[in-house]
Length: 171
Image (cartoon, rainbow, N blue to C red; front, side):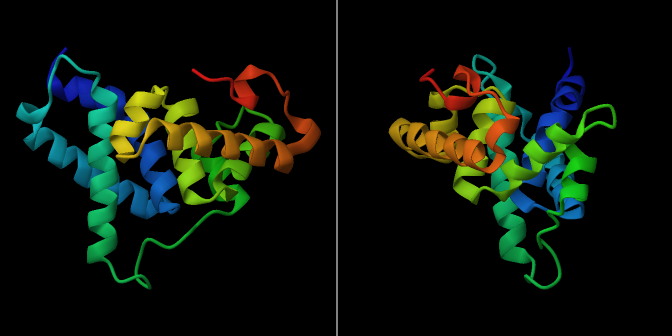
């Protein structure tokens, strides 16, 4: 598979993560576009012996922070987190109302908890990969993930099952 095809396969994860960070559809798209340009130019910096997703998500994260520095707050990077917007971006039409409520609850989490939950639960990163991407200790990852999951359980109550996938048994 060539480099372009590899990046195309990553698009859903990159878009999901960029929207998570920016919490605005247009800004998320801008971050993804700029990130893809950077990835195309930086293929030589990717260590092919390692998984690509942490490398790509780090570029998206760095690009997001670059955008924040360059964009006056009133012009862009504003929150667009209505339940309808969140459901439209992340929930295909065939999924039910409970899924849309769950996604909206995730977006109501504070940024550090939301980011770690998305990286671990949605993007499938290991605790170690998430810790390296965010440049924080694994213990902090585990603590924030546990708090995020507890918050989701508190928000959603009876709407979710409290099995090991939700309550967060250690990986």
